[in-house]
Length: 341
Ligand code: SF4
Image (cartoon, rainbow, N blue to C red; front, top):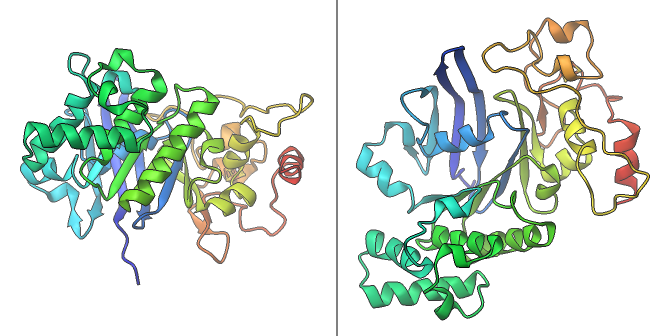
């Protein structure tokens, strides 16, 4: 049986603030298999990015702290690695692509120089060979005239080209896991699709798994193998992309789906936003943290926390008191949208 590339078990990452302890990630467990595309979806503040930063043990200190849990990457517990080994792991075996490539790239060095530096620092290559590799990578991610563009600076690249350059830098050392944090957020829809296509091509080329973090459930359709939906620092639902997309069982997932635009959107179709705002992570509501915003809440929802339970025979799980009911179906608007797909 194939072993998971990454196992996160009962992860809890908290932040000390003036208002109290923010439980940004609170008891999250999941696995990512080799070459799998695993998407983490949720609104801002749901804990997606903190989960990713925890995997790299990059939680901002001293306020942030991984208070418990295990993060096992290829048989190694990341949380117990000495600093130098952790440093080698980051950027070599696990890499992160950030949301805004303009701030992630150094404005005073050419793009080619920055990619070449990865080879020089981690592989000890000479200047010429490192530069040659950098140009090859720029070509691989679809940057035209890569030799010339390698000599240009980040501000001379468009947003989409900068993100391609970031992907080139990320895959330079043939990583096993690429963490992409909202890699398409600042880009228009056409460029978004191109960037996702480049990411998937790099997965094929380098046999890497991808942890894709996004607030947009639409981005993961047709891209992810499995999806984990997070709400208030916890897992609301997890399953294959098909299960979560076509048979979602958690009302929060239903809400995410009815609030996204679709390519087949008709003029008369309304987007239905999730009412209310995400809860304060210092003071979570009692019972199910989604209950103040949930149109389906009943008395038990404000009293008892719903444990994650299996809702399909293939491993789909959901944290809702009613998700195991056979008649627990999403709202008509969602079903109508599905039927037109
Ligand atoms: Fe809604 Fe209750 Fe299910 Fe929570 S447990 S998602 S409040 S129905």
